[in-house]
Structure formats: C-alpha cells, structure tokens
Image (cartoon, rainbow, N blue to C red; front, side, top):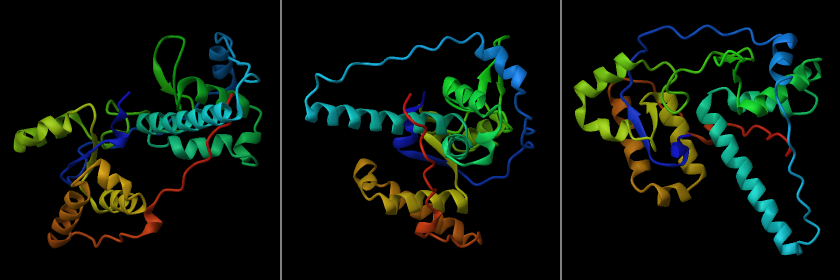
Length: 234
C-alpha cells in the first residue's frame, strides 16, 4: 500500500501516452463469482461495547470513521474507478444493485478492496466491467508506460528520487490534473500546512502550461470530486 495519497504530489511533464488503454473487461458471471465465494470463509468480529463509557463509544465511532476514510484512500489508489464503483454498489436504489448478482459483486468488492479479484488460479483479473489496473495502479498516470517513465528520467534525472519515492503520487502536468489538485488545495487549506510550497509549485506549473499555449485552467470549486457513499460497516 502506498500512503502517498496524503503526501506531497510529484508531477510528470504533460506528454501523450505511448500505448492504447487496455480493453474494458466484461466482468464475472454469477458462476465465476460463486466459484470464489464458495472458497471464502467469513469471520465477523462482534465486540461487546456495552461496558464502554459514552466517551469511549464516541472514540470508537471516530476510529471507525477514520478507518473508512483510509479504506477509501486505499481503494482509490488501487483503481481509478473505485469511488464510482463504491457509489454504484453501496448506494440504495441503484438499479445495478438490484440484480440477482448484486450481493455477490458487493462481497467480492469488499473481499478484494476494489474491482480486481485474485482468481482460484492466483491470477488477478477484473470481476466488474472495468479496465484491468496497470502496474502503477492509480498512484501513477493510468496510461503511463515504463518506457515513457524511463525516457522522462533520462531527460530529467533530478526528478527520479521524487517520482520514484514510494510516498509520492504522480500526476501528469496537464490542465485537468492541475485544476483538480488546485481545487482540492483551495477546498482544504490545511493541506498548505501539511505540504508547504505545494500550492505554489502547482500554480507555477499551471502558469507555464498556459503560457505554452495550453488550455485555460478553470480553477473553481466545481472540480472537486463528489465523495462516493461509503459501504456500511460489516
């Protein structure tokens, strides 16, 4: 797990991808899902909280809330569609949840912390209709290739330590990424304290992109992603 989603962002130069995106997979049939779930044992930890004082129960609730936030971050860094899929699977009334295999899909999602399963042959594969995750998962640009990264390091050797740091999240320095990240910084000013200088770096990159003739950056609050509803606690 890379906890870099809450640590300084490092950025790649804006360059076009070298390869086409992997094809979207069809997802599992109910029979394929059953084959895995039949080999899965469920253990529920039902602690007795009756002896806790009210303040202690509040503390437990806060810990559970924090755990859900970190679980969301973990899933988001494993697959770029995780937030959308959480909303689809765990929001009441969505048509996809009403399908007969909806419970299977929700269980698989929670089992594998995302839409990529490890099948009975120990191979990773999507069990939902999504693209397979690339080697860099969602902490590097989704379309990034090793050849492209090596070429960037050859041209910018001073950036290797930061971009290859396991606590970094790597974005392309394009208009969409810069706009989204700057909007998050404006929405959460505390990040300026946690990551001094990050806002100025992103603003400088945005200005450089604009002066090179790139698209104007619509840096407004509407670029903040809507938080997906979290699944209920087991």
